[in-house]
Length: 197
Image 1 (tube, helix red, strand yellow):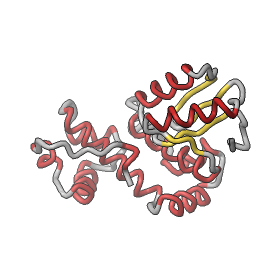
Image 2 (cartoon, helix red, strand yellow):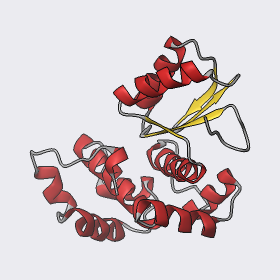
Image 3 (cartoon, one colour):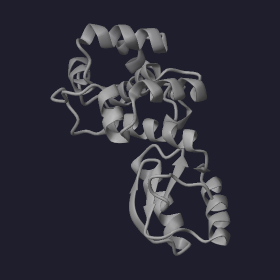
């Protein structure tokens, strides 16, 4: 099993995009008797390495739940970038008080030059980090619009848009609908977070 060079007891899991995903992965690891030190989106720190036979069982169980163990170091980095972006966008305590932009947050958390990470992400995902962020933010806007608890202005502030006009323009460009048109739609137009790109 290939693991991160920085921590041999860390495994990376693709398609972990929400707290429910964390619960499912936690359940599967615990069911196999694997001791977890810390678990977050796309990453699990273990107290000790997994035995090869257990590793194969884990792979199978995760796969049956729609997850995939990542064994390639570059793919691990891309998965970590996605986790950072999703956590930042969906963290309800995250407001316009944030002084750092996404590039600074990603570079600071991964301690790797952002230009390298950006190039790597684009080469493996065929989409830029910036465009991925936009798509994730629009999915979050869709969710918040469907809830109906916040105005578009409040959503713009919550997701760090420079103005409600900027949000409206970006929403229309990505979805083909205005925010008010989207709210009136009865069909569900949201995408699973792991399918956005």
